[in-house]
Length: 254
Image (tube, rainbow, N blue to C red; front, side):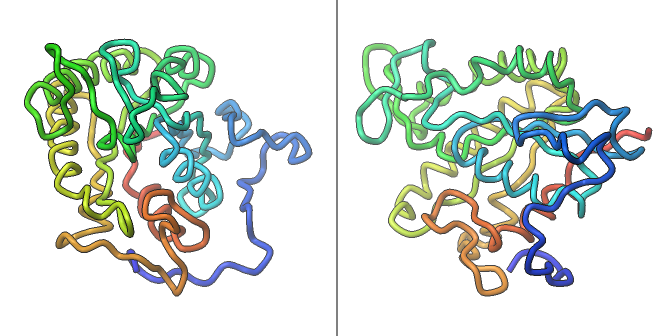
C-alpha cells in the first residue's frame, strides 16, 4: 500500500464533500472551484490538468479533498499531447491525439478559477512519438527530449500568470500489459525534471518514487487495485495515494 493506513471510509462516503460551501445544494461540478470566500479558511484550491490519467487522479483527489484540507477541480483532457500543433505527433496506435494539445485551455481555465496550486500530470505522455527533423522519434531520443522540454518550459512559464504554484507530477511506471514501457518512463520523467528545473517556481511531485520506489510498482492498496488498467487511478485503491498527493502540495500561509 501507500502511506499510513487511515481509518476506513464509511460505506456511503463517496464522494466526500468539503463543507460548508455557501450552499451544498449548489455543490459545484468537478470542473469548478468555489471562490475562496465560500470555503473554510486555509482550504487549498487545486486545479488538476493534463491527460486522462490526470483526470482519474483529479477525480480521486476530489473524493479525498476533505482529508487534505483542499478543494479540487480537474479540467484534464483525454488522449492529448502538448506537442500537438507544435510538431507532428502520433499516439501508440499511430493516430493523431483526439484531444489535441493538453494545454490548449490552460490560460482560460486558470484565469477563470485562479487556483492556489495547478497540478499537472501527463500520465501517458511517454506513449507518443513525434516527428522532429524529418524523422519519427520517441522519448529516449535526444531530438524528442529537446522538443518536449522546450514546449513544456513555455507552457509551465505561462501557468505562472494565473495558475498559482505549478506542480509537475512525474508519472509512475505503467503496470500490466504496459510494463514494457518502463524504460521510456525514465527518459520521459528526466525530460519533465529538466523542464521544471528551467522554471524555478515549478516544483515536481514524484509519483514514480512513491508508487514504484525500487522499480516495482505497488499494485494494490488495502485489497483494491490502485490502477485497474495499469495506468488510470481507481477508487478506492488509489485513495491513500490521493491523500499523500494532497499532503505534498505546497501551501502558503493564509
